[in-house]
Amino acid sequence: MLFNSVSFLIYFPIVVLINFVLPKKARNIWLLVASYYFYMCWNAKYAILILLSTAITYASGLLMEGIKQKKYEAQKEKKLKNWVVGLSFASNLSILFYFKYINFALSTLGGMLHFAHIELNVPTFDIILPVGISFYTFQALSYTMDVYRDEVYAEKNFIRYALFVSFFPQLVAGPIERSKNLLRELAAPKKFNYDAFIEGTLLMLWGYFLKIVIAERIAAFVDKVYGDYYTYDGVYLIVATALFAIQIYCDFAGYSTIAMGAAKILGVQLMENFDAPYLVTSVAEFWRRWHISLTSWFKDYLYIPMGGSRKGKARKYLNKIIVFLVSGLWHGAQFSYIAWGGINGLYQVVGEMLQPVRDKLVNRLGLNRNSLAHKMVCMAGTFLLVDFSWIFFRADRFMDALHIIKSILSVHNVWILFDGSLFKCGLDEGNFRLMLLSIFILFLADLCKKKRIEIRKVIMQQDQWARCLILSCSVVLLLVFGKYGPGYDAAKFIYFQF
Image (cartoon, rainbow, N blue to C red; front, side, top):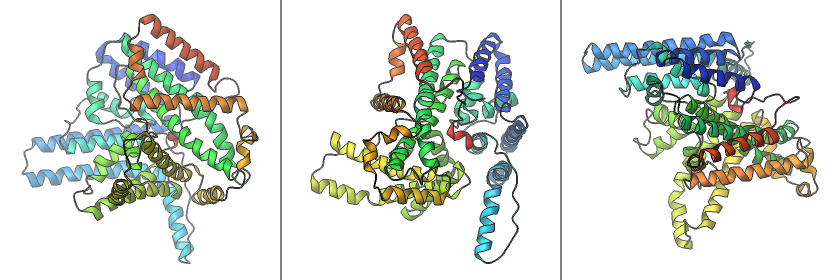
């Protein structure tokens, strides 16, 4: 069931209505049933995987709590807890590996053996990737680590814990919530709140704007060009690559925003997952504002345990590269994703290594880092670096990405920017101009966000009639300019495949 489908627009109001009619003690049970139904709309049998991951991590929490209560000596307690954590991680990651990476691993092994002149008939498994498996697996594993570190108590209420793992607004594509936040939110179901309903609705409408007005229009252009990059070369690919950076932002931020809004209406506060990521002056800052829940997950549960920055600069740089390579692999079982992660890791390492040189250059040239011109140049440079890495993310294969880069570097058709050729790549002139206008609106909204001007809060401060008018106009605009209706197949969000 997709957020941008008619079935969800019927399903969600029913869930909300029944949730607030039921007594508080029954609400988590209802939301758990609703969450499993939501997931089973894709593939009912794969709900067993969520239940299995839930049971394993729930049991691991109770086992560690029991070990602590036994009052063993510190060394033995740590050893026993390490075994529990190891088994929890091994079992969950084994499930993830089989469904997401087994074919990739076997084909890579076959390629390596072939390179060594060893012929092996490598089997291929016919596996359908469970939607959102990477997200709920990481969320469940973060709970195991939080209990291990004594940051949270082991959850004894299985219903509440199962809902933590499967809460439907953020189940399929995040944000990846922490047990310290979401379990606490679910522990005390809230009464219906009119202001929360309006604020949540505003969030959902903005998410729908990002998805069906901007991302879907850009997708028509990008899919056309990247789908036939031999024909649409040079400037076509430059424009498509720049637009893909906006598409993936609007697509993923759109999902996260709709999830935040839906949860807000149900009385649950989810974390912010994006914070104007393209209005930054460095790649390091970009990654502090992009997919915040995953970036912080890797920092807390991989980077810091590997030593972080505590073991010298060389180890720090290696740790960063490893984290980004793993992040690339998390996104998909392809070398193109690994390359994307590795490139962003190199950006971070090289950027930090060159920081003293940049500081000296700025001082010698007498540049003002706080000036608008300097910031704009840095923003443009950061966008170009990030956008270059997106080529590997969007291309179907690693070799396709290399061909696209070669085509971009051999530009010979600049005139297509002026002769109307761009209007023949999936979007007519009217839709192309509407897309550009929508991107400008996104820019203004992110600029306000960067300046800490919360448009949503400003709207909430208005009189009730004004808020209702804004909501009504927003719905009308989405109905007029959104891509939906007969002949339109509600497109999946990009991050569903991860």
